[in-house]
Length: 256
Image (cartoon, rainbow, N blue to C red):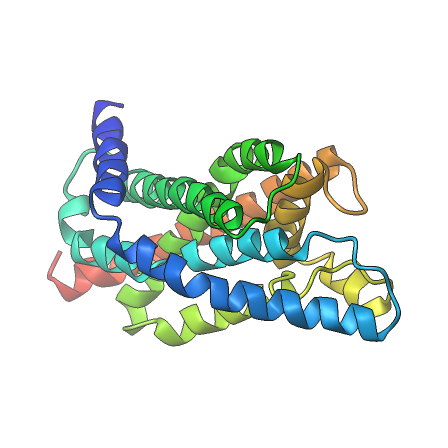
């Protein structure tokens, strides 16, 4: 446990001591947030529908999550240290998962506070802002855990087939398009009902909806947590299968 604690503390300190990458993302994020919110509100207005959903803060939450998933820095660090990590007594998946979990948690914490600060500076404040931030802190461990599993999987894919930017692109755009990153999945219809059954929506849209209203959309809190845990279990099994294959190929390639 001491080694894991050291890894987590190191990653958290690194994020807060070197905040430039996060600050740069926060500078570009308002462009996406304002654009998406304007499009959504404009379409609602043209359709003669009331604009009661807090779109601006919704897109701040979703873009924060999307910007933090499977970061290049985490991937590069795990790939570079893969061989050294195999020689340590702690299993690679545990030490690398802890590293990815700690970094993503720190980023989400940092960006969540900055996002609320930007909204306050822009004059966008509601009586629920504090509650939204508290709920955001509550869901960070769940988001970071899923991201750590995805990072482990992509690290193994990187080691097996080479640079995985193409797959990272597919994952990020799938989350954006299918998870509620382009628009809130609120309208009735077969397409939206289908999207709400996918893990992307559980992770992006439902998380943002919970932060805003204290409950997921269309399902109970217990069912949502169960679904997140189920998807996580699938990712755990998949990460172990891919890691065992990657480790075997890596050792064979290095004469191990």
